[in-house]
Image (cartoon, rainbow, N blue to C red):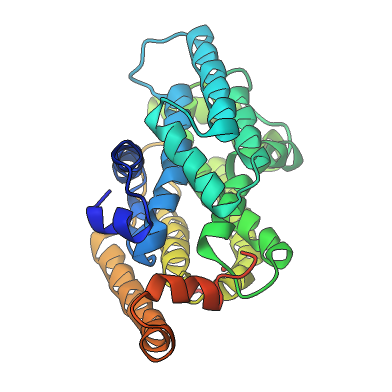
Length: 339
């Protein structure tokens, strides 16, 4: 975390500053797409976003680290310990673990519902024992805790120009769309972990089952039935992106460029998968660097344009505190168009 970001957020105590910096490091290492988008947020809101995503990455690492030699029982115990630390930290803010301390501070500053964190950990725990899902509805129950709540946690930080309740549905849908994209991109790696997030009923509709996916992963052999199933999953994912799209216009204008950039980059992963003819069982699809750079530059231009009116209002109405003006002018009960 840069000193400028921490100062702008009003985070001055050295231990708390170190805690937020730890979260930023986790986000930078694991979430390159979203870390890039976060740079487009107003400087005073970046620390909170890093705390939210840093916690999510830290918990996910407990469950998913392929290089770890820990057993399932040891990972379950680590999650139990994390839950206890989280409960204590949210209750009194006195957590010793830096990631928990930053998260608890952010939750307190923005009034984030604590149930979103417990729902998230419940889904993380299910990853220790659940290896597949029969239907899209079954998968949806898991994704409420693992993805939808991430969007809901973000709303108070981003701010909206509508009622919180109106923005909540699209925010949850966007979190789900991002995770569905990850499921498709990472299907081969997830099989290596013993998990499959593509629902069995969707696969069966195209004559595919888990064994056929594992065979394709193991042998490097393509199968048109697998391609058709993956295309169907991608089509479902694009539907969820369309459900999330109206939420971009509900955001505080100065936060829209960040989320719009993440929206374009993440949905661009689907385009990359399509361009590679759905070879996700054999290689990881990535958005080309030139495309990422173009989207980031467009996002920067939009961010600067969105902040200009805020700076103008600050100078002409309230003096030298742009963050305070942004919060009071557009920070309502706490999400533009796509491309």
